[in-house]
Image (tube, rainbow, N blue to C red):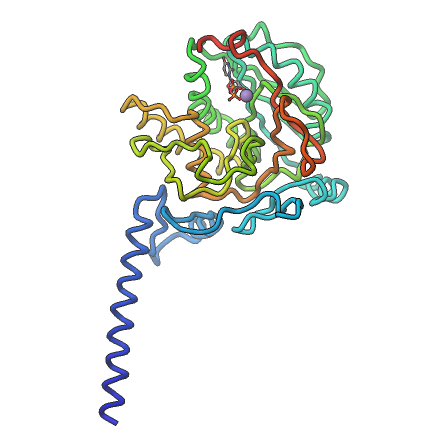
Length: 345
Ligand code: UDP
Ligand code: MN
């Protein structure tokens, strides 16, 4: 009997040691993520509900790269954290429209058109009017240094447009980088009051198909059309540890395009604010991530998983040949002459 108690005692001791080891490991491996959930009993109910919605994952976790297209060529409509990936056939437009119709929502949409990029506005806006949240309230916020070049496009009844004048830049990298800071500030000054959801979209693009309420979610990212069948170690993430956008080669879910960021105003504010802070840290060390704010966005989305993903139907590139899995191209980057439209190389 005494012998039996000894075994029980020893088992408990070993178990205790292993458990403390595990707790230590989990603690250290998560200690440098963006926002650490704290185990605190006095946490406000509202904050607790909010943080339960967030899908944070720790640094350094090892798991299989999610696939976008299965080996038999079928598209995969769900991410491994159970977020839907929106493809043609995964939603019923009539049903989903009628559900959201009852919610009286406003979708803010920010578009930057600085320097020569104002020439993309006409096609962007005209094609959006045909395809983008048709029948829902949309408010476009066009940031430009040339307000006189913003074309007069006839908008449908529930769609509105505000032009916001900003100073010019002579480096495209700065224009691209400053989008996060400007989005952050616009959300603080206006969107918290004026909208429910916000999308930030590249202007050098056109809509060719429906982009509607199926794209709405708490936090929404789009899978980049150039890398959806690429092994994660070949993603063009920032690979230098000195950048805040650094992602080790063994990590990564998808490569997200910087041309699309969306979600609830509050959640997009968190993305813009965090990325802007990380960009500032990099800038203070004269580091510029491989793909500027897109690299920082990819880092954010890796450790703060989007609640909904848009398939490459929602972010294509006109020069890319059509593929079997992408049945409809809805929004696509137009072909541009970089030397002609950008202020610098
Ligand atoms: N942009 C701009 N003026 C510029 C360069 C960029 O307004 O001179 C804005 C514009 O909204 C553009 C976005 O920044 O869609 C991203 O830049 P770009 O499209 O050139 O990057 P790419 O999609 O080619 O990586
Ligand atoms: Mn672009």
